[in-house]
Length: 159
Ligand code: ATP
Ligand code: MG
Ligand code: MG
Image 1 (tube, rainbow, N blue to C red):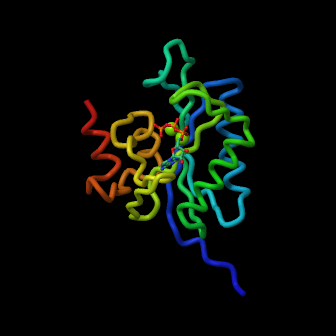
Image 2: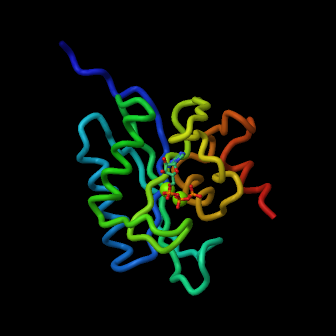
């Protein structure tokens, strides 16, 4: 039996605003790259951004995006992302609350997925500068399959 080729392209957003943020974001990237069936291709710059939504008084975030090539399907990739979040001590207390590491699947090929557990494209990616700026570092021409616009066009359309 041969291994499946890593022929799916996905983009993953990383964010941290609790503890050693840089170590969490870097650690998340490394953990992803060490996962069987996942190859991290490119990483964006790290950006520090003020929190959007959630409880007041949270610290700033460090945000980044990586592009990956993977043989995993989208749900398997989400499993991997959530296992890494758990490994880095992510607690799920309140929505949009402070977190050591958040890993969100932004795009997976040109798939459109709407299940209870997984929505792709990520439902809020197109309204978030802290996602679109780093996504444009790695893939300005990546197309949002529902809106039919590139990452660059989505960023330019932000208010
Ligand atoms: P947001 O989704 O607005 O960025 P969040 O990242 O803080 O908020 P989480 O607590 O990380 O939200 O995730 C809540 C749930 O979202 C998870 O249980 C997961 O199953 C679901 N989910 C749906 N679509 C996605 C996706 N594309 N990437 C990651 N999680 C997703
Ligand atoms: Mg998130
Ligand atoms: Mg998340």
